[in-house]
Amino acid sequence: MAKRDRTLRVALAAQDDIAAILAHTLQTFGTGQARSYRMLIEQALLRIQRDPLHVECRTRPEIHPSARMLHLGKGARHFVLFRIVDEQIVEVARVLYDGMDLTQHVPKSYRP
Image 1 (cartoon, rainbow, N blue to C red):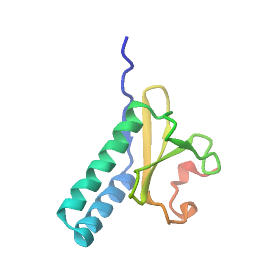
Image 2 (image 1 turned 60 degrees about the vertical axis):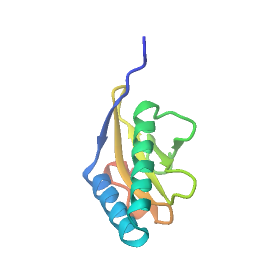
Image 3 (image 1 turned 90 degrees about the vertical axis):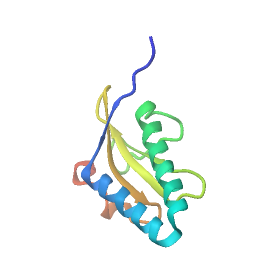
């Protein structure tokens, strides 16, 4: 029996993050780069949905016992912060710039 993808819930904050990232990329680097970055984000979300325990999805217990993150990839400066809610649901909390102070941007539900 094939493994089913989990349901991916993307929080409003993460949706806002993605919109802001893509708007900035479009304005700063142009249409082609914005399309490429959109694809990186989509691929990261799909990877998380399919296998949130993948070796590239790092645990972040200092943030929350179930917090994980996935960097978008080579040349990218953002990562996806998420957690596995249960066997069927993965929740994406934020998509953040890797130079940000994480403690200021982590959702309250992720704080101890």
